[in-house]
Length: 191
Image (cartoon, rainbow, N blue to C red):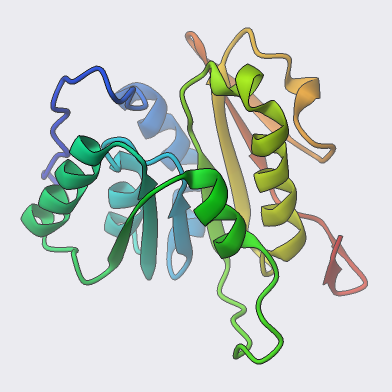
């Protein structure tokens, strides 16, 4: 989708990741995206999900609870010609994310496709919904196949020690902090 942009509608119901931060993120993780399943849990404009598809993700799931933003996401997917690769869900990212990132049902076929899980909620949620966000990170850490990656976006003042334990790679870009985590492998199994 080179040269085609996701247009920000300017409404206050979303806070898209700044273009420069998104560019830096994808410069870091770009080579890992090909063939992954992408989860954009607080989608807003869906820019990270669409960028992931553009860079070779096999599929994407975008979750958005604002009706207008959800409608905008569907329209953008059609405009970009990726509606068949993205599942845009309307609802609460905590409830839907928990079911998507948790353990597979015992009768489900084995799916070892690596995931990239983006958590870019409104910054205030890192304080007001800290326990729920940490729960999503723990689910993604414990149940993602090998080669997966978790990306958390916070403001630069957020105390990174409040994230669940792990080998986080923290990077500052102006007022934004990106924290990246590859879930560890122990004896061939996720912790």
